[in-house]
Length: 432
Image 1 (tube, one colour):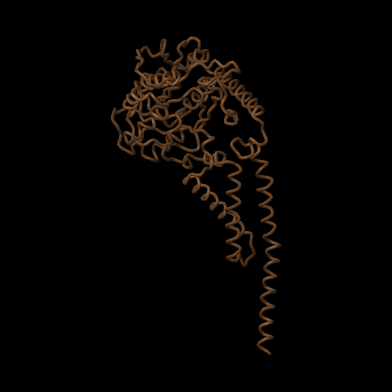
Image 2 (tube, helix red, strand yellow):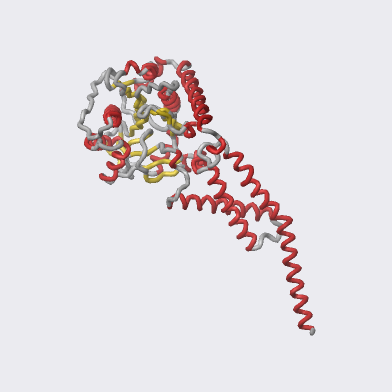
């Protein structure tokens, strides 16, 4: 009988302990769990509603509303660019770059531009791109004597009003006209199997501007289309990446190739709409890693807030799993592009990885590969330019890399190739 009574008392004590643990969970942990769920269900969606590329943006903004906002922001950026030029001294700016063209610049920045005769609104893409990159170059302390020039490939160069305007501030080369360097630049004509005239011209224009860029004997060439605006830290990140990864390059002073990690280019822009989480191994692993980080942070916070006795193993496991799931759900709502923006805090946080095939609005080339690349493009112009460049690096076993997040924003919502607008959600940003 005594044994039975003792067993009953033990069971009663165990039930009492379980009940006490349940009360503790209710008092200390349930509130935190509810608060975090509130964060996910209410606060996070509220933040994501106005974030382009989030899961909720298109659900709360119509296409026409987004298009009008993108046009308005484009007009604001044009106004800021014009203000920048009006406050600049055109003679001093030209003198600044002309001196550098006579030396051996470490980096040559070439902006390839063509007139975009939109019937819908003023584009002003070249004004935006050139004003921002100019301000960055003139304050940069990383690269020596960076040279900027405008490569106007319009068949009627005098009709490209924006290009004619910025020629007052920067050196220029007109494919079908004159140039400010006093040199002769030949147009490389070649037979193309591409039946699309605009694609054929795109190849010829790119090769022409690349050849002009190469003629200055720089270590690197930054080829830009006229509708990409750089972030302010573009040269900070590029300089760090070149040094950190010991990238091979052409010494513009000693005129020789410096040994190092071979590379053809760094891609500095990739369309945001393709940067989201997807059914790809690396993206899935990245999502899981973010979740693990969130779970670990929540576990640490919960441990610090716990009583002196600390958390039991079951509570630790609960918080870790709960935090991981909550974090993954949150970043899926916000969108990978917006999460990746946190890496802009420091050049050390940018991702350096093998390049995808698309796209070429902003390419940082090692100049020692340019001659072979131009020869390849002239004989393989039957496909898109970006795919031909990707085929070149695969054929020659010279790796190309991409930096994430993007170091440039795309402002070219209107495309002259199709006389139409691209998805306006990609162009919702101000130029700060």
